[in-house]
Length: 286
Image 1 (cartoon, one colour):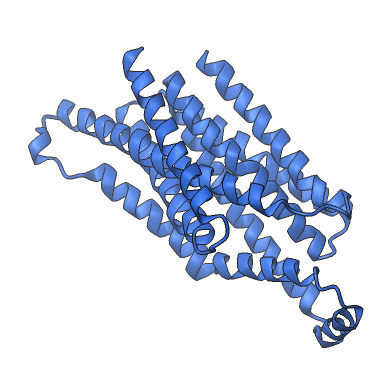
Image 2: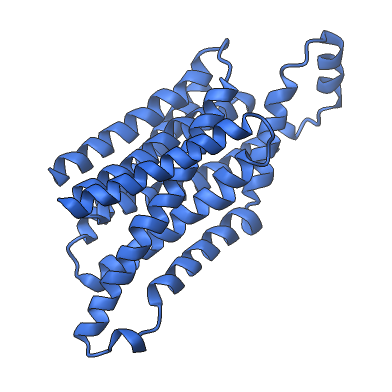
């Protein structure tokens, strides 16, 4: 059963990125449904935070505690290694995204450029084109390259979280959290390629490369899932830190920074938390 779920996740996530990433670059009339994207983001934010805090973190603590007990170290004398690994993985991603590559700024820049395409006046569009530097498309392509690199890191760690778990209910919960996030990610990537005027064939190849990152992460986690208590605890801690980062620094920070649909997004966030809690209860009853 667990094998079928993981294989199904690998195929599903690959197809979701391929389809959602190609829609913006192949359909010129494509427009985002902002409300649907926002509500889905609110739901995925609740899923990521709840899965990280309710499933991954407690289990990583338990795995490492069991390993240390086998080494003769009593629980009351154990350093909280799992929590430290969570903080370190959170910090590493924070450095990569907000310091090294300034992911938030680039994401906002892409949103601003997307909104600028909605200016109805032809005269304003002409002025904007005249003011645009000849280097702007090149700079935007560099920004997209960095953004794609960051998405690749996310995808591998998200896949790792799915591959490392060995319980069916937990695997379903984590998979749902990632899938809910994937389609919006694919659309964002496709829009970025379209705005940078990247050739459709090159954009398709880059989207395909991005699509295989999640299956690679799942396969890597799958191979590590039977490597003992310590390895499982370490990689689940890394996954927990990744999920908590995505929930707090990306989804919640960006979505709830906007006043649009704020109560609806909060409802979806709470609904996701309830869903993950029910999965935990179901897991304990099996």
